[in-house]
Length: 436
Ligand code: PLP
Image 1 (spheres, helix red, strand yellow):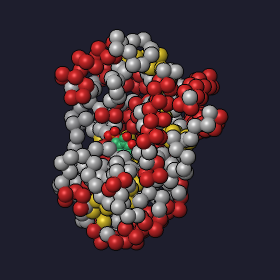
Image 2 (tube, rainbow, N blue to C red):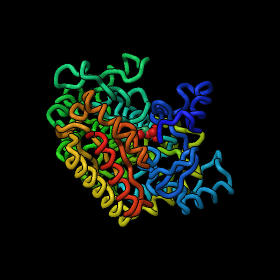
Image 3 (cartoon, helix red, strand yellow):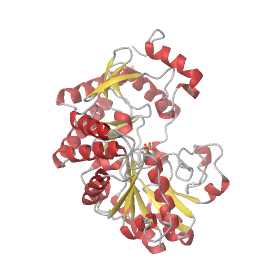
Image 4 (cartoon, rainbow, N blue to C red):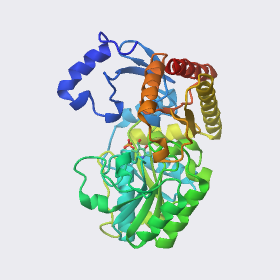
């Protein structure tokens, strides 16, 4: 049972506090009173250092779509390790993965690899500025795109910052320069008039609009197709680029979210699942824009290196992961996602707990209020909702399911029907506790 003051996780955390600020490296894995330390994973399960077995519905924040230690991915990575883990030279495996991605993503001609989604977004924004010669970028209120300072503006504005209807650009991290805030236009998600009028207003200075078609931190509700179409049209009208952040949403379909929605962005950022479990990011898009990276005619408009970019271990594992992810795999992911959403929504009603499970495909998120979720503001939790969520989280965990503290769940292909039933049962029992 968590928490347990005699556990090995607690002892590791106490030890970690002196050498790591707050006890670890990722703010996202921090939990009170202490995080649970992983020992190993296999398929859809993880075991912590105390020997507790958990069904993993975090999957390293959506990046593991084949669960843990899939034999084909272990084989691909170890084969490359034996041949050398990194070179100051390109490798064929980088071409192989780039070819797969260009074949799958309708808008993409060319790809450039990086080490994380954060880096991919940073380079995409820089590419848009280099291509257009304009300074400003636009992004949606509440949407997370990694930790580049431009990308994290207005990630978590508090109701006291909301002002009127139009979102304002507020710093997420202390130390964000005012110049950054002045160059980020925060647009409302899923609000065509609000977003388009801001795009028009800043049009001449706008390099790009960055949008995640199903932004996790802004509620994990899919964008309306009409909203994405309006962004596409408005960016074309003002000569700005449209960037789709598919770091997570590439999980939604064989051709990405852009394939599902039928939108043709200029640039796409990728990460997570395309690395087969290893650190990765990618900037992808139309060759006329990707030309900013091209060094054939002297110094490129946007030089881009990275000691570990296109690392061959990542490239091989990523290719193996993507090859396993065929249309049948997506059909299975859609089916299990739908089953879990339905099971949890039934349980919310059965136990009389206000709330809903939203999302698409293998991604879902639990909200603990009654109102429909459309965007960041409607997803913003009251104190009572936050309380219900934290009771749920603890009860869910103690029934053997690992989910992210803020309600995100990412399912994986090794989950069998019995695992899906266990997840739904654990959620239902946890909701019964919330109701009591
Ligand atoms: N973009 C989106 C939509 C994300 O969800 C994330 C991470 O969760 C990132 C970018 C940043 O990716 P990374 O954590 O690999 O830096």
